[in-house]
Image 1 (cartoon, helix red, strand yellow):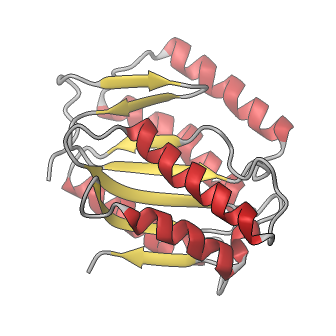
Image 2: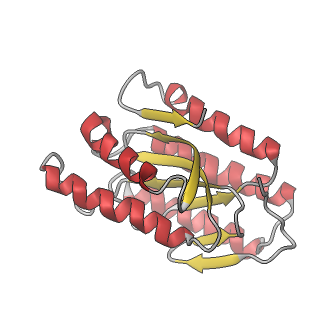
Length: 202
């Protein structure tokens, strides 16, 4: 397995958020339902994050990156675990549609390591195969699953997904194991006994 090299070439794309890709380095990605965060809460988070990025432009050393994730990634996860919005993915039929899309090109275009489908968001740890694109992969997961979910007639949330997503390149074996543990423990941390799908490669 390959890990992030801050001195190596980085492919960067931007929507509302910056996204990094570095060859076949493992990636931890979070995407969420369109109504998963109240607008005011998200605006406050974005303002604080933009101020941090202006004061600390990437690439970062490990200390700065840890500080960023403590202030912003961890805080965002806390907000998501508070279960704002419709939480449509509590319905196992809709969660299964998302799980099926995640597995659709597993072993071909990417390799899944673990994921959890929470009531209003999804965490995935995976590795892209050579020449595959992170934005295209996320568009495939979200675009197709959204269309199939709307075809079921079980959910009226439109758009279904928030357009952007949050991603993090995996730095080391320890970081990889920490992320796997986070995914595994996320339902219990959020106080869930049902209404989620947890999968991990054996």
